[in-house]
Length: 311
Length: 276
Image (cartoon, rainbow over all chains, first blue to last red; front, side, top):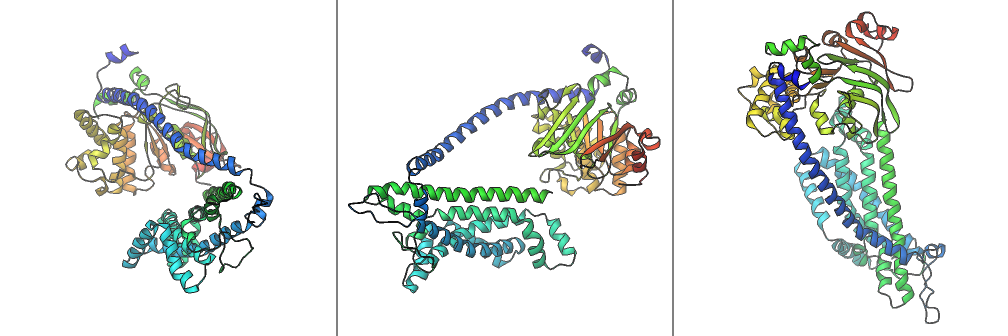
């Protein structure tokens, strides 16, 4: 076949085609070597990055797994005595405390973030630039300072610790994160969809509420749940304001002092009783499980909603 | 175009052409997305240096088939292509050819002109070559000139090769995209409704261009415009969506036959605009 080819008059296009193919093939060989090298290097990096995660999870399950029982998550804590050193009771009120604080924080942060995110996308004004800068600065503030803020402006005037003060601190922590994900999700909605709504004579607010926000819901919900999971594990903002780490009573009043899982882990791990010391791992495991459930839920919801959006 | 090319283009029997320009063969091709079948059991051949058109109503799988020919579905999560897709007798999905090499042999022009927005006209045309590692200035210049001439754009842009591609009109941008695809010297060019976002004058120019390009590349074109398929294509595949929403090939044959004497009554109805 090659002989026949060569006997035909030279053709610039086919000549060039041959040249280009030869260079492409050479490039491809070089790249596939590089590609193998990089794939290997990245896999190694992944393994290295996973080692701490696996070790942490393994240690928590290994040391905390034995504590995990129905009583541990449903009973109130007890203070061990000299006679009954292992009687530490459960951590039910800390679970309730964490859930109440997280729910209140979400109730404050989500509406605020929705409005903020929408405003940042839809408006380009001096005010929106100030908001954007504020949100960015807020996200950079050390979380303990948010606790200090809640302490000065809520705990001091009220003269007592409260779950409400803790939730305000967490809401401040969550707001920039959720705002960012709301903004990203809304920017992902094609302009043509917004324009279609406006072209029907709808007001911008109506288009935002009825068209844009629903189209962006998967991203918004995912962002919210991830921010919530993150906030639930925070210790620093609660430290100064929640007040009742060693509480041994039920209390569902959000304006009273409460206990919370991350703080309980912190307090138990510094305890003088070996039994409480050990229980710190159990508390940590419960916290990890709660966060895991939130993460899985957010993945499930976003997968479901984005599949629905395709159909 | 020099006479030498025309001689090759007008004589499909010449060995040079048949040995260099490969034929695409589809054998029982299925494409599914996350388990939902989008294209079922499609088989046809693409003849060298001809234009093969894919026609059919929306959802009949035309674009899905086109995009399976250069493995663009690889980018879609959950997408799966079964069956045999042979380029020059080599299965393009079963490890016979590297995807990057495949895509340099089977170029693509999209529905909307999509020149790279930050690059100049020249840089756009030679971008494919540069991506594939071509550095030699003389080769780049030569390929750019040849591609722009073939895309009927050389006369209007040769004096302003350094300006941004975004300054061109829609029709010119689409011809730039054709030139960009041609510069890599593909053997096959896939065109997904290449004129659907263009005005009638630009459309006519692109159609003329396609006919002229036949001696340089084999083309597969998806079109919603029945007249366009009748005007430019040599062979024609007619597809319909089955009850389960999967696209099926109803009839394949020379365009003349499909438009004037189809074997299937549904083809006749469709080409006469009775549905779809």
